[in-house]
Length: 268
Length: 286
Image (cartoon, rainbow over all chains, first blue to last red; front, side):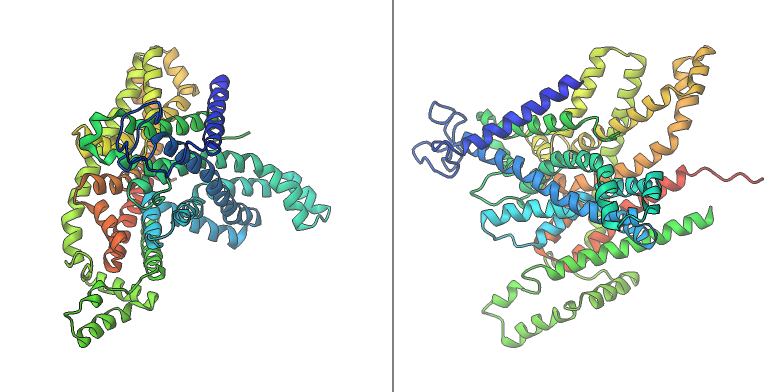
């Protein structure tokens, strides 16, 4: 199992490297239209053929992978910061702050994730620049994805608060910020890291769902989700198997991330 | 027991009101709120356009608007959908049944499949079966609901199958973890040592222990099914609550979105609370 996890982590790293390296190769321009070859089949010029606007599918796949695989961790960072502030800090403080945090977390968790995401994303401007749409999409994911990690962090912070070493540290008259920095954060770090890695594939999948519904990344910028919209053209689908390439890439990335983080759910 | 029910009901009401208020606030803060395309119609007179503008005036104060709409809802008046131009109550009545049928079939299928897989891997414990079940669950966990809906359209499969495929891996994963955790318990080992059959051990010793967790999982799976119904109904063109919430969000239809949000949140919270309540051990009188 350890070898499988290592292999999955290496595969994910290789995919990140390939997608990042693709941006340095001029021939892989995701926005360039080849009007001579619109909707063409795979060839030496276009390894995965071209889409309905004559854009190279392979270049778009590289760019889409890069956007999804680099921005999902950024969203996870935002989410973890919020989870720490809303879950860990009140959990360590206890009292009214803890009760208020538990209520807020339960409230957010009671709203179905995709429903919440849909409402919030639809409320934000839809006619934005492609770069802004990418930022908005992943920011929304990060800002809304804190509840589940916050619940776990709160529980852990509560147990840390009641731990003997904290009582001992307090009895020595340690300053609160030093207590937090030297004793609390190091004890929460494994959970923060585990929750971070668990959130990344969830955010990639959520972005894909939003993009399929037309609320994700705007054209011409591709993401793994927006590339999947090509599957909507069902009638011409059977003729071109390359339309499934983003789906294969999504499955490989998400499964390798999930395998790599499996066993991290309950860190020691 | 009665106080527990009352406490849970109070939490359900608070959650529904808070959820509705949050969704109404989001709509109120959204750019373009209050804009009405009828204002661009050159055939309308100034008086009519002014009347349209003043019709939105009572929606400016979000708290007042929300609590006024809650009071109206309690009287049975759900308002009129601006984007679909129909009474919200009528829309909810029509579509709730569609989503309930879709989610119900999907849930039933997913639970049946998960239970069968667990039974099969318990009574026919071959490595090939174990690997294939794990691979299937893993693959389904990696596919977004939207993609499954598109594949269902492509291969002409019913939409409830998509709901089942979304719910199945989560149910299977948690169920098998529960069964696995119970397997090594002392009373199970004792029952086996006494020569009890595998089916008897499962039904008499495993099921009672995991009953409470299974009920909690059932409550959670309802939420997953309702959430999955949004992309499935939107992409497959099924006129249910999922599609309605999608249309309401896209059209920034405040009365409709509010009511749909409260209905969805209410269903999820009721399902979770009901599952918790059913799973509670009755107190024994001393």
